[in-house]
Length: 303
Image (tube, rainbow, N blue to C red; front, side, top):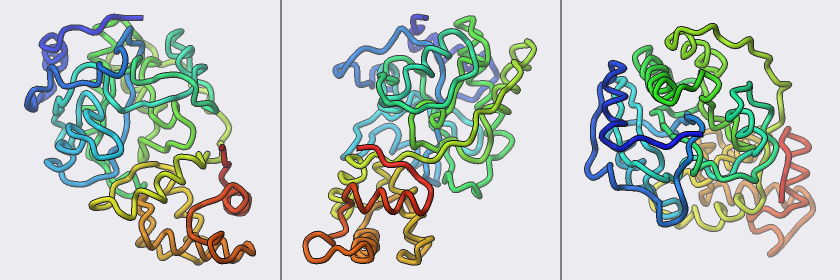
């Protein structure tokens, strides 16, 4: 348990770690505190953005989008290793996650497998979005990984935490995959070395199937086609699109996490393959058809 420092002190903590810090606009007072408290804080959460281009990425994380107002984090770590501060206070980055994971972070234990979404993470964590497409192929430059290490260690040192107070979004909320391209176990080992403590032995949990939340998927299916650009409004969309690609119903180029009109058409084909027709095959997922897709292509559906 810890009280966040003042905004100016926070920026100085990062600079003292040797980081290049860019203060963006009115970041010190930009937050979502009107929606709930921030703090006491218990850890640091690392994300990837599913975007490319530093300027547009920073702007997106600062302002958010129609489905999720900004700030979407406290800092954006771009590929050049700079830390862009875009908000301070409650930020829309963690959402609901697993209370057992939070308990492990508080106790500085290796987090268990996340299987629930019952606890407010926006209150409890510092959040850092890292510029990366999150496709497993977009590289993570050494200077960017070093910045993630330094950011995490700086905050942990200030609060007298160890490396187990740093987790990835994928360890917090079922269905999330970020950060993708490096492991949090390896990053925690780096943080421990920077803190000059012995890394905690890591026991990796058994692989878990991705989880797709039906209500969030339906919201994306209804809202994304009319949305400007190609916003990624729910990470589970990518899981479903990957399954539709594997089923031969969606071209891989459209598997981008945006449930646009092409994905609607592809899912309608799946519904027809399941025996539905007419209005029942409109491309908006239903529980039965989605469970059949998940059973065949390896994900779990929650209502």
